Image (cartoon, one colour):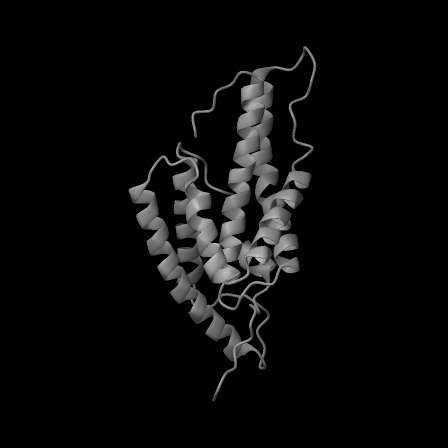
Length: 216
């Protein structure tokens, strides 16, 4: 039987995102850029370690196509993991390691040959997430204590961050078609990218009250 592959992924991003990040992100240790690459590698490895992934709603009509995309995605992500692991070893501590390594991979797997589409996707991702976390700010007033601010940010990370990241990623990925075989990496990228985006804001908030974060 000859199976014709469509141009774009048939996977539903909300299903892939919930499989990649069912609960919460792991805690930061120190190197946020390297740890983001490591999380992306481990999340995609765990995704493909399960023989049957939902990806999309499988029925008699799309079962073979679903399996074909899953196989294509698995092969692509094996290559991605080798690239990311080598980059993490070769350039530890590089301040833009994630963007300079992961964005070209996103272009290759999800937007190959369409740089304007990639730019629209990244801009939309930033705009949507910035709106989602706009309410997270340091309260003003003489009664505000540093320990309360640190505790509040920690609670937000543990209770709300993962859900906000998944929701933002779903909205943006639904509006931007991803190439066949690229949805799993695109989903993992958005989760890791938005987590780094949050960490940038978290760092600014902490430094605004005189707390110097140990991570970088």
